[in-house]
Length: 331
Image 1 (cartoon, rainbow, N blue to C red):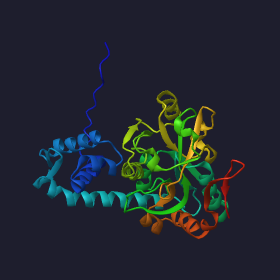
Image 2 (cartoon, rainbow, N blue to C red):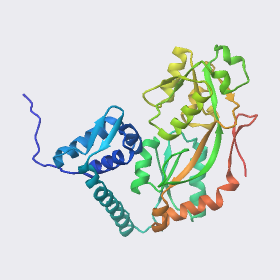
Image 3 (cartoon, rainbow, N blue to C red):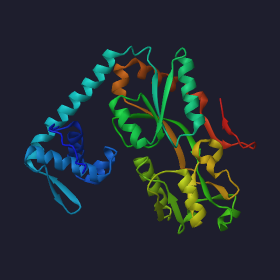
Image 4 (cartoon, helix red, strand yellow):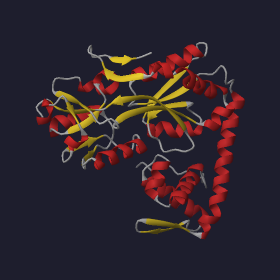
């Protein structure tokens, strides 16, 4: 019979516990705190429970739909903030001490939703302007990349805006048209363009809102304001699963044009029809994000941000699809 091995090590209070506690204490809402630390409410609640167990007292009084901080929680909050601030500062200083920032690669986190032309242009611009500096690219969901940006493990992040993170600075790189994708036999497929008003009352399938939490929440609010309220959320953002769902359900979804590249190319298939959304304020806004405080101490981050601010403007990506079907890049 196999038995689970036991470990006498007791980790006690961990940094993760303190980050979750501070988020809940400042938001007074487990759901909002979870979005802030890029987790679901369950692990945040578990972290707070573990911290309460370690301290021997309750940090919050949990009411239906609201949370109140206890005297113990109020006493812990300023200490937890100071501890986290010191830990973050120590990590930044340690990284600066053990590397030669002028020579090391620029580390760019790229959202899986980012069109390849965009991050390739960013990497080429930084590399060529900084004397052939190597640019390391890490692709993933914004929900995974942003904590790495916070910790200094990523210098820049190319993600969908807005972020709703006051500690992070951003600049817009490009605004892409959004397209409605459907089966080729859908009644709406006869249209050359569509507006959000024409989608009112119809079912729209979305990828997981946890991939780009604030940007997705902003988009959902915009959809609902235009009467698009029947929204189906997939458990993850996966274009393969999204395309299969559209084929099966006959519903609608939003996407970038396949000619922007990446996983959106799965809709370059005769089974689907793509129709451009005409609402001027409804675009896929791609931005670069960085920590200003880190840019002040780390030359590599500062150089990368300077290049984008000074050089990117003439290389604005045009979201239009040309008559040849290619993504146009203007100069």
